[in-house]
Length: 248
Image (cartoon, rainbow, N blue to C red; front, side, top):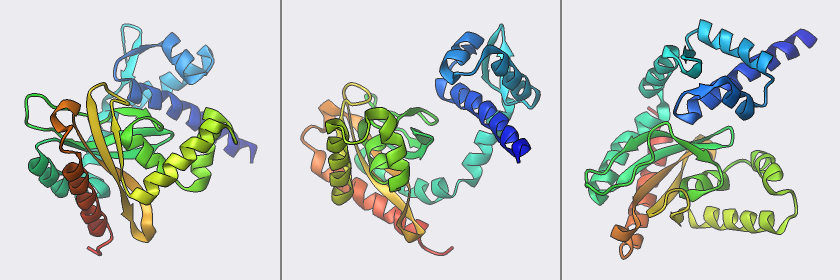
């Protein structure tokens, strides 16, 4: 039994290092990784050695980044993702109808991660780059994901952030309940200044939340056009949900 626990602990440590490398977007020094993972230097170097051996991490001039096998995983994800396959045609249509950018966002380990993106063709445009992640509490995408998490997962995320029973926690819970009731959430400048966004949830069989559809645009361009953009996003999300729930 203890062997299994130790093995799991080692795997978790290696994956925590890989997750930090994946999220950061540029190469990191060993000291950066020690700070971001909380691992000791000796433990970190053991995990890096294993990740480098398998091609999940790459070292150049003493700095570390995701390795070539990470790219193979990403390519495999693009080909095999059930959600991306069902959502992409409707995302393209929404981007064409609105002439704005459309993203597909999922929740993973306390982060909102963009797994697909259709960029606007306008010269002034907003984009939440594919692969980018933000903490699961700021912006339309993150709040929509947070609002539809299972109660146990939501409690686990909120407790270290604000503590049970705090006024901030109670206020956020009320906001999340309002988002669930409305079926969408809007934000303006919460993640990136000057960016307006609207997000609507996507559900698979049994009303299980699987992600959100987000339309994003420069605030100055859409300030008098919020209602139709919200409506088109909500309708598109409902269409993708129907596709996810239709037997193939």
